[in-house]
Length: 127
Image (cartoon, rainbow, N blue to C red; front, top):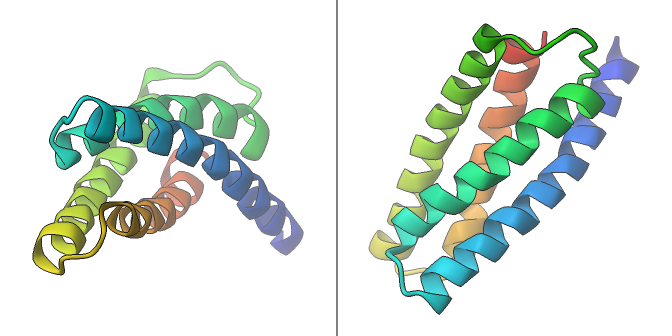
């Protein structure tokens, strides 16, 4: 059981690297290229990473073989909404309130969402 959890965590982290690249790339394009509000940019870019995350984590990380069900995706979406809310708050607090650089703040928000997502995915979505 412990080995399986370790493997899942490693795979989750690797998928997270890809999701983070998608998230940061789109975030940079929106926030810096198009001057979209950072929190709005974060919500849009995060959402794209979430879609990628669901499909890859479902099939590779947690190795679900059966057909995806609406209830499973709903749970995944809810976990990610909680993570998005928490990470958006962290982004705002770090950038606007603490005065940290935008990408340092985004990194803090990303770490927050990764922790919430792994725990929620493991315990609630793909158990």
